[in-house]
Image 1 (cartoon, rainbow, N blue to C red):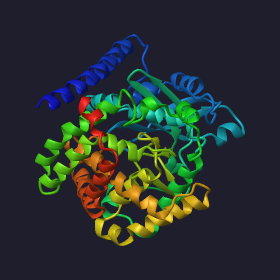
Image 2 (cartoon, rainbow, N blue to C red; image 1 turned 45 degrees about the vertical axis):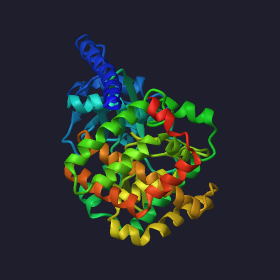
Image 3 (spheres, helix red, strand yellow; image 1 turned 30 degrees about the vertical axis):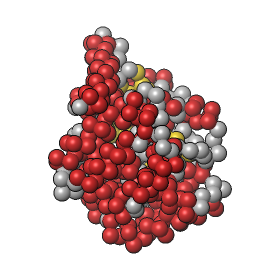
Image 4 (cartoon, rainbow, N blue to C red; image 1 turned 180 degrees about the vertical axis):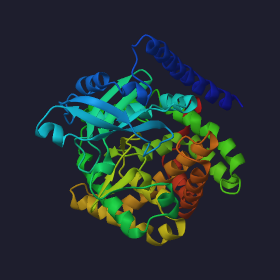
Length: 418
């Protein structure tokens, strides 16, 4: 009871700070001193042009001035952002105006206040802004071109390429995720992840900090880490109540045991060397452009083991029976591809990491279903939960955890003292 009250107090403080920032922006907006919150507020060509000029430094340049900015139907809706495609008419003549993109994809905070509040508590908009500013042009995989990033208090604006204007591009939807991918498509996704991870495997801690600071890390951040731990502890009981047939007493007990030994988990997950991971690498955040697989929505990017993305992709995006048949060979193939790219990882070590990180996929599903579905419908999250519970059991996560606890007998003292 005392621990639960402490967790609620920890979360309440963070919620109060986020609500204060949202309120300050509402006041500033009435004075014309806040970032625009709605797509309609960006339809003035002068304002849109100023955004591209002031917030686009060092990115893919759009030197022309817009003459008309027209929002179209939401072609890519999201429950944690407001995504709008704008048709742009450019002022100018000659090749520059002809070659400029005719449509731009713009991300802004969600109109729904609870979702916006949660996003500011977790900080995933700040993560994506940092990625777009500092890392998007350095990644070796296909990602949307970034034209401008603006961020102030609780609000942000990201202007990027509209991927549907690329020839032969396919975005994935919930139906694809629920149906599940086959081993061939999984292999293509894993090769993309291997390129991403190999690129950043050798980065020094100082370079990592400049690009994506520790304070934005979902679990290692001194400010955010205790919040995430509190959220996970608070999510167990309601998730169990809502999905007893899937997240049963045995699964809930294992979940609580893992959280009690958070130190052992952290030590295993975040030993050097680390690399840049996408952090939300299910199929819905991949796209196909011809023969290439690219990635979108880097709201969960952080420094971790590359296997973190591998297990998140496979467990969330493949049906359990199909994954069980191909799991080891897929993980081994990823390790082989990384080694070919100069960032070696042995297959046995990789699979051991895979077993340990499977708990992070379960965490995402438990929090989403237990504290409210912040990413999609409950039906989709429930399938994710079923796949995550099946994976932790199939992979023997409980035995993996016991082995780490034995190696770090005092690990849980820090978690209990929070």
